[in-house]
Length: 436
Image (cartoon, rainbow, N blue to C red; front, side):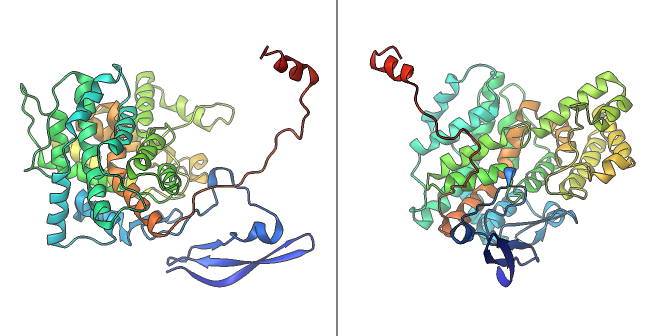
């Protein structure tokens, strides 16, 4: 639980204001400035929210200096090794890992809610050829509000329970349908006898003329990838979910906002951008040139997949993915020259004081694209995979936000525009003559 044990003093002009120091369960400290404007007339300015805590949360803990990531107190490495994605989804949404009965009930709820409303299937025909799957996904999820019962702050707990499971399950179906549509193949419906991740792989790759063999190792690997992406505290898309949700809009529109935020190249699109950059460096063949470009402050080139807003140590998710990537490619006999190149880049960067001094370690995006490629996931689906994994986190934050009776998000600003101006006589005269 959050505690208030001390105060900080702010002096401004002739006023002295005491600001409570809020302390979290892991020792995080923050200044409570909610009464600052009332006491002093001041607001705080923090572009990009680089030093602003927007809420209290019990879901995910990150210590960027030590490279720690925990869901509901459980280290990410333990969950990746011992849990399934369904277990972690339940953990995030409900606050604890499920018992055997709770796991079965939740799995059954996911299965029953996996079918997409048949009338929505026709929507796929309206998207132009080449439409990015993330744009299709956001549009389809937003449209769900017209086909399924409304879910908002006033909805009963039972409806919220079913609707959370519906979102987590159906969005997976929408994603697979969108992929099938993009390659001109018939859609594959979810099966009642398959697990969450196995079902997704089957819907993606099964074909009437080429039946898909569901590899247990691929299923295990997809579980790991989904687990490490399931939540990451107050990132851009989660903040969007909380901000949109604070207006008490329905759950589907809220999740669609998260998908839209994730689609950007600086957020969920980073894994695809990393692969494209690795391909460019591999085609050029001169790694040293790109390392020099990355270190040149006058060169706009940046080495993608390194550094993180929060982590100043090795991203714990990146370490998991790197190890899984090496094992999977070795076990399947796949040789990807991009993995060899990624190792060379990491070895070079981790020995170079320029990158070390700036805490530029590999982040989760650096190896995930290579792993998805090895599993047969096309590059334009990489960000979609991120979105599917992040669904339980978004839902968990939405539920936490509405249970806290959060006020509608409405930041302040510092106005730096023109001062009061007068309308010119010429403009007023033209308006009267209906010329403008």
